[in-house]
Length: 87
Image (tube, rainbow, N blue to C red; front, top):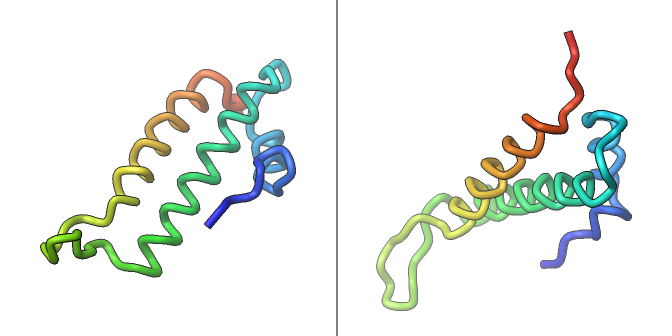
């Protein structure tokens, strides 16, 4: 399942409202990509469960869990540097 390109998605609007004005376009796109990736992984986990069977039939954690975790980690790093400071 292919996610929409971040530059053409509503995710980009969310990102533009969430980052500092000086944030470069490439960074905005990277943030949007991680948001989209995290959301897609969560949808897959919700639809398929937190465990799946591998090719041998063994029960394993859903691979999307690792994808989601990596996206959250990178997103956190990017938003720590570029996220809008409020408060």
